[in-house]
Image (cartoon, rainbow, N blue to C red; front, top):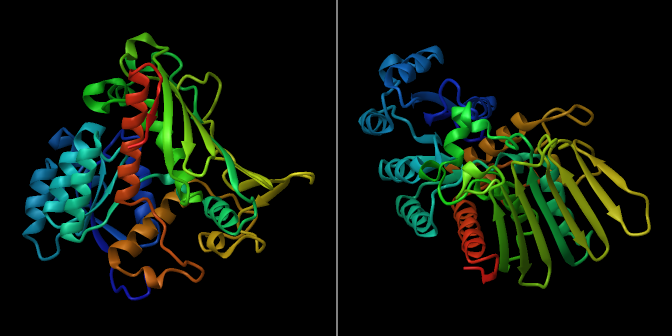
Length: 387
């Protein structure tokens, strides 16, 4: 818990009920460090099912609400009302729920994409600034400590000038039309619920955000994207896309976003190539970072070890040798959300010079990237200036 806090943040959830793919990890991460306390929720589109689920979680039945409108209104009238809310609902609801939460004076932690358009994202940013509230976006993989190690290595010049960035999130679990039997997948391939893209927004933005954490000094200058619907019933949404990008320093990047990489479990990899050395991180082996210096044997850096930079070691939870996973990574993000919400970034653990977390700007940039990729792909895969 933050050093100056006497109690956890009173916290609610919208969505994330029984059967949710993501609700359990939100709750596990938020509650792990006792920085948040789940006190209210609107968990399900079915009010009775949502109420019953809230009671199962130990909530007061009166604070297990039929919908977010009722929850925000009722909690605003309580002296012990919620102070923050996590949104774990289909994409098409994010903008409306985020807006309502901010208007009720709540901090927001939202699933990505934050919304559908850059104009909507800019509206949310302006509203969050006007209300003085934090908006966090759950790019959960960025909580792995080796991402901070990679960031520190680039900052300290271990790789030299960055030349090439290869990003991919290419799994194979949707190489067949699984949505015909799986409701939790069905909405992801329906533009009414998913928005203007499927895999670009659903998986591509994850390694993109990680690259932004590692390489904050690089800005996209222009890009070119091609996207395909290999399972034809998913058109106009893509289940595969390849994006080529140029940065303002002359470096280039590729992003492979796919749900049809048959045989691949997850396939999220980030490779950064510099003039002196390269690093590579693979989310299926998140505790290691490959460090490859030209002309020398490959080194595999392990999480939790004293040879890592302090920025990486402050995220360590159980010491070197023990495997940490996605739950720890998400908990690291929720700890950063807590520090930001509490205004206690100065009280972050020793070694933290700047509090890095996926904030409203990260959410906005994810939406901007998808919008530019779709614009390029729909124009025939042409180069477009990034805007």
